[in-house]
Length: 127
Image 1 (tube, rainbow, N blue to C red):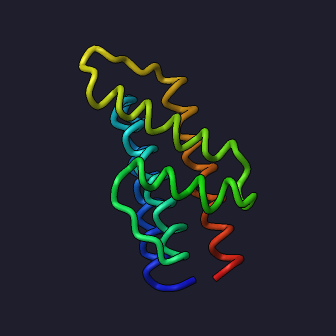
Image 2 (cartoon, one colour):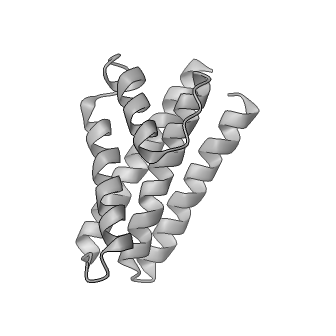
């Protein structure tokens, strides 16, 4: 795996680790934020492997769908995962009355772990 891509995927894994720590500390909303950024950063590693640089959240989702979902490289569930993680992150970050239950936060962390692991395996097998 190329050094830059390795650095990006390691950053995604760091976000996962942070999210787990926050979850253990019963900070569900903060852990959802880290779960999203783990998947977002892993997606940026994928795009970087194709020499595609996108900075916006929407742009990353669109390019991921275009190059990895529609191409049949990743199952459609991974598009749903990144979309769900983004939607929840937006809600808990900007809706001050939003509450995320522990079970929901745990599920989001599982989604993010699955996503990051899938990306790492793909990158290791192709680079």
